[in-house]
Image (cartoon, rainbow, N blue to C red; front, side, top):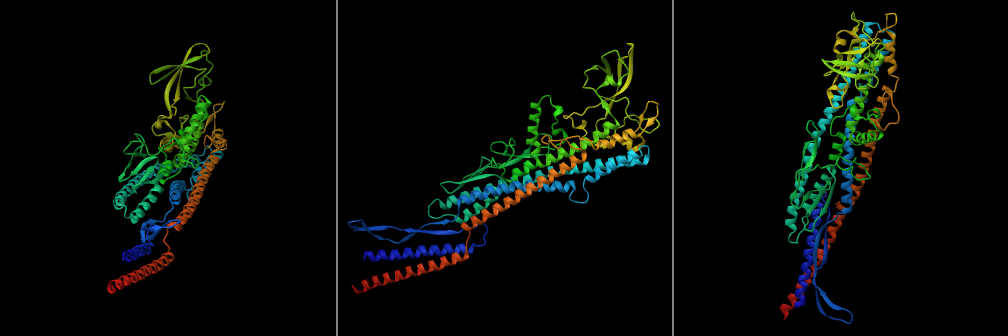
Length: 599
C-alpha cells in the first residue's frame, strides 16, 4: 500500500514539473518580441530516493519522482561582457565621428561656401595691388576683401566655440542618463533579492530588465558588472563603484575651472573626477570606451588658439620644447575641436601678422634705425617713464621701423596696420634719446610695439580680437603701400610685391609633429586634409565597431533569443510528458481503488 501511495506522489511530481515547463514555454512564446527578453529553461532533477535494500554491488533504491531544480535564463556571460565592452567603444567613436562631421559643416568645405574662397579673394586682391598699387579702387577692394576674410574667419571660430559649449548639453544629458540607469538597476537589485531570498523562485523577468539597463549603461561609460551571491548586480564604472546592491552612487557636472564654460563629470560620493585626462584614450590600454568619455575628449577642456601650438623659438631648451609638445599632444591634438581651433587660429594669425609686418614693420635692432651713434645705450621714455636700453643686446623692446611704408594721404601717414587688435593699439608713442657721432644728445619720436602676451588674450592677434583697422576703412588712402626712395620720391610696387611674395613663403608647420613648414595655402590644405583624414578614421572605426557589435549581438541572441519553432517543439514534448504522467496517475489510482474495494 505504501509503494502505491508513493507512486501517486511520483505521478503528481511529473504533472507538476511538466506543468512548470509548459508555463515556462508559454512565457517564452509570449515574450518572443519583448526587447531584452531572455529564453528561460526549466532544469529538472530527481526529487529523492528511498533505499530498499543492499545488493552485492550497490544500494537498491526507488525514485520518488522529479522536481524543478531551477528556471534559469539561458545567457552567456562572456558574450554579455564582450557586447558591453564593444558597445561602449562604439559609443566612444560615434561621439568622435559626430564631432568631426559637425566641424566639416562649420568649415563649409562640403557645401557652397568654403572658407578657401575668402582666402582666394584676399590673395587675388593682393595680386591686383602689384599691378596697380596707386589705384584707390584696387586698394578699396583689397581692404574690403580683408574685412570679408576676417568676418568669415570670425564666424567660423565663433561657430566652433558655440558647438564646443553646446557639447556641454550632451555631456550633462548623458551624465543624467548614467544616474538614471544606475538608480533603476539598484531598484531592480532590491526587487530581485526580495523575490529570490527564499530560494524558491528566480526573478527572471526583473533580471531581463536589469540587463537591458546594464546594456544601455555600457554604451555611455566603461562598466564592469559582477553578480553577487544574493542575486544583485554590482557595477564599477571607470574603476569606481556605481551600483552596490540597492545603492546607486551618482555623478554630477561642474565647471572644469573658474572662468570657463566647459563642464566635467565628478563623483558625488568621492568628489573626484570621473575621467582621468592624463592619458589619451586608446585601444592598447582599453580606455577608449563610452560615449560620455568620447564627448569630453572630442570637446576638450577649453577653447584653443594659436598660442597652444608650441614653437621651438619660444623655448630656451629642447627639453622645454619637448615638454610643451607632450602637453600639446595630450591637451590639443587629442581633442578634435581644440585641434581645429588652434590650427585655424594659427593660420589667421599668420596671415594677419605677416601682412601687418609688411605694412607696419617692427624691429628690435634699434641701433640700425639710428644715424651713427657714439653710445651703446639709449633712453626710451614712454608715458613719462624713462628706461635705459642696451642697443647691442636689446630684444625686449621693438619699435616701428623708421623707414616704414606710408599712405597716399596728404600727411603720408606711416605704418598704418591693416588688421588691428580690438583692445590693444599696435604702438605706443615714445621718445628715444641717444648720443650722435659727436656725442651730442639727440631725441626722436618713435612708436614702441605692444607685444603679444599669451597670458593676456586681449593683446593677441587672435580670432575674436582682430578687426580690419577702422581708420583704413574710413580712408583707403591710409594703406601704407608707398616707400620713399633716395631721391625723396615715393615708389609703390615694392610693398605690394612683398605682400604678394608672402603667400609663397613658408610660415608654420601644421603642428609640432609635422615635418615641414607650409605656405598659407598648403597649411589650409593640410589642415583640411587632417580633418578629412580624422573623419575617415572615425567613420571607419565606427563602421568596424558597428559590425563587431552586431556580430556579438547576433551571437548573443543565438544563445539567449527565443525561437518559436524550438518553443513549440518543447511545448509538444512537455504536453506528451504531462499526458504520460497523467496516465500513470490514473493507473496507480485504479490499482489503489481495486485494492481498497476488493479487500
